Image (cartoon, rainbow, N blue to C red):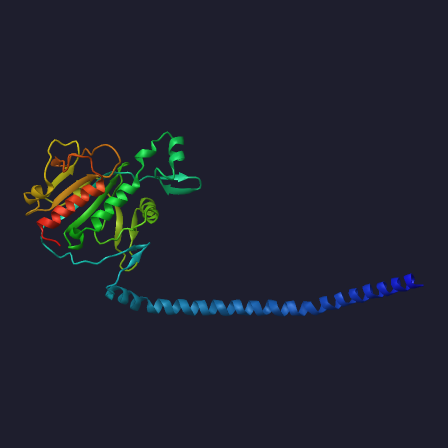
Length: 299
């Protein structure tokens, strides 16, 4: 007698559950419609608020631009701060040219990257290239040495030009602060070689920009152009040599930014060697800047 009674009870429970589900569905339909209407009304309200905000931004554009121009703090552009200096001096200055810089962009996998010997050695060997020739870190170190020197901070650096191994020429403004880490520097160079310029946010000044070859048309008129090479037979003391050179006119220093080899440019007036031993580009530039600081009494 217990078994059939239990079966009847179970059937009644199932029926009641089915009945409850149907009632719940009937109750949920009007609630869903109410939520849908509320969502549509909230979207309309957000659109209206966005349009009002855009109108307010357009009205405040003039005041914001005036505030940015009046500000003397550092402006940041793509991670590059701008260090403002007084460059109204009429004293003779210097220009640095980095030749044969290893800055080349290639598509590795699905993205474009700046090639270097550490991260792309397998890719370079696969394409029959020597990984030892791809050293963008040399350019990075050289630029840091130039822009961080007291000569630049004193306003005596006129310009910096870099020409890659492929013949791409670009200018670096003296008041740019190059990123300290190589990863960020590689990102900046990748953006420069793809977009041909990097522009400041505040005043739209082009901090780094690709320019037309040859580099001679951008150098100061009547300037003396000195190239540096370990293979040069003219071994000089940089301190004494600059006393006879950097007196009345601007001077252009041409340094190679490659791992091996020497620079061979027609516009160079004189090739000199400042050490009996091979030096890196960064240390060569540090010797030049130190000699300039001593001659010009820059402390």
